[in-house]
Image (tube, rainbow, N blue to C red; front, side):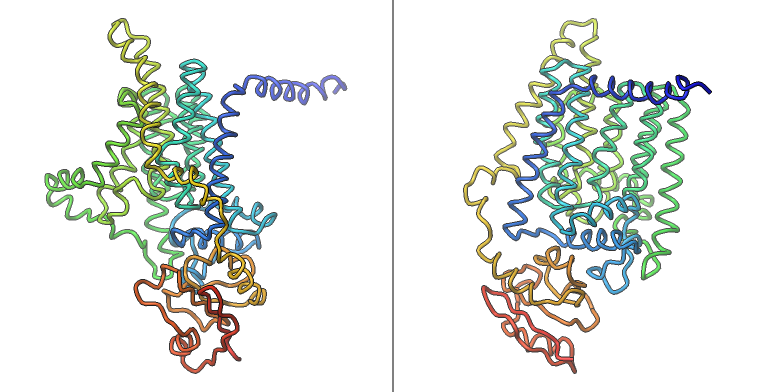
Length: 476
């Protein structure tokens, strides 16, 4: 083989890479960069303000720590020897391991999520620019970046859906650009993010099959169904400490089948559900309904609204994040399609789609999570920060500690952390935080007495008492 032939392929590949880079709309990447900065600033204010809205950041920090150590995702916060792959099916989170190994901190996970969301902003913005033009495309990218679903997810801190958001954006972008292989590839990865996304993949595959007239869509739908069945019926019960899928009782399928009429009425009844649907209509400029991509919203909405868990119904928390790339790319598609109409009134309506979405997004901003960034006190580090870290420094590396939710993510890198609400092995240390919401209305005043009552036969000694924190150490 000649030298020219041997070097031809690498040069050709390098040329294609350069062309692909040059073909990227800079404005879309700048929009994504601005979103990354905004999300990261918000996450930093939470981290240094000791804000922990749920225990999930601590849980996923333990998972990342386990993967960084080449171990199974055992998460003591959920219970001794609890394998998190028996809770939800998210093997793709193994990617957190190398990142955590470089920067072992719960803050690392927050920033990873911020960057993943920002990547999806780039995808939405560049798709909008390609199909609608520069100004409307950037407008869609901006209101998507500021959408209520993403703001709520950033504020709720890290969840596995951080990976689903850019994957959905990349898959739907490929659908709009009629790239079947890319659409199926990115969409197919969703089954490894969370088990319920198998439902989304089924619908996505059917949309691809119908819209692009490709059998690959049917294969993708079958792929989604396969992993949904495998994960819920086999994998999760096999890895779960109780030998079951813990969330099977959230939806009463038997009752729904017995009385389908009542089930349909119940599905769309409730103030929180109305609020979610109204926000979707407003944020999507209504014209997203014109796109077949809007069907991909249905699986997530149906399982959330059918569940008996009311926290699933409303716009809070992270549950609506996966809806946002679908919603805004459906808006782009709807506007693009209506622009080609032969009817002047339809074309006029199409021109209003993006401005209405932008206006709605701006009107909604003051009521959203990021509104606190306009308040100077948001940027003030918690007055308990120094005391909390002096206390945590007293805990030896590798020791076990029982804590409430607020400090768990901060403790995980150096300690084996248990949550105070579980039945745990006797820990080396117990933290009583007077301001931690985990205690509920009754919080112990005396950490020593509390720990010795909770773990009879073990003597605990108070070694820190400051700023509402008490730390007791077991005397072995």
